[in-house]
Image 1 (cartoon, rainbow, N blue to C red):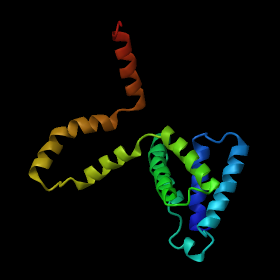
Image 2 (spheres, rainbow, N blue to C red):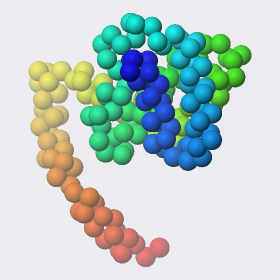
Image 3 (cartoon, helix red, strand yellow):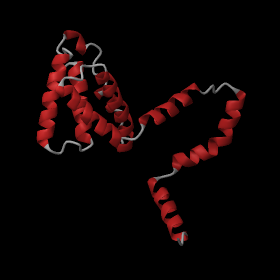
Image 4 (cartoon, rainbow, N blue to C red):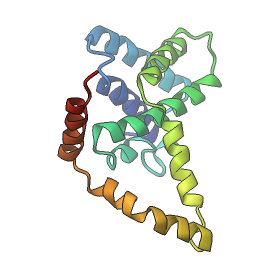
Length: 165
């Protein structure tokens, strides 16, 4: 399977994952549209396989459902960006774009989370002021880290019992 085929396969997986295409006839029509898109991009060219897949391999590392939704949101945005520069007069491109926009609206805003990660990466941990702030927040960060889903549920149920709204 070529890299382009992998990425288009990833597109199909994304759409199925979010339950958008429970109806197999919609999925079959979308597969036909993707086949036409492969022809448009000449995805059977030999250089497509160079370097391996670009999206499907990334999905392996994201295991939790909410984590996957973050990375899939980014991937869907990248497909939409790619399709922005294509011929919109072709029905298959319009159909794929419409389905991707629908999917994007059902996903969380991964850009905010991505920006947060990039901002963390830029922190100069050798800066004394940053170090002081980090030490000041250390206990709170560790508390967040050790919170289990059970303790979170317990906190929610306790606050609900206290509230006599």
